[in-house]
Image (cartoon, rainbow, N blue to C red; front, side):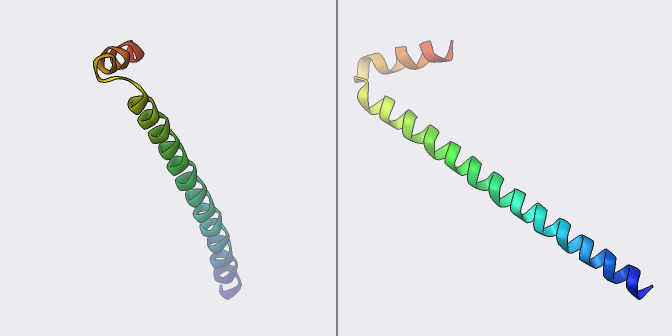
Length: 62
């Protein structure tokens, strides 16, 4: 019983480490993607003159 419990705890610990690693990786990936998207969007917005901004925005959606 003790050996089984010890083995089970070790397996759970390994799985937890893997899940933690995947979670950190995904969070980092998502944050980088969001930051890059914000950077592209804000630079595009700043470059456009005020009048053509809405037309360009609607055109990109379609």
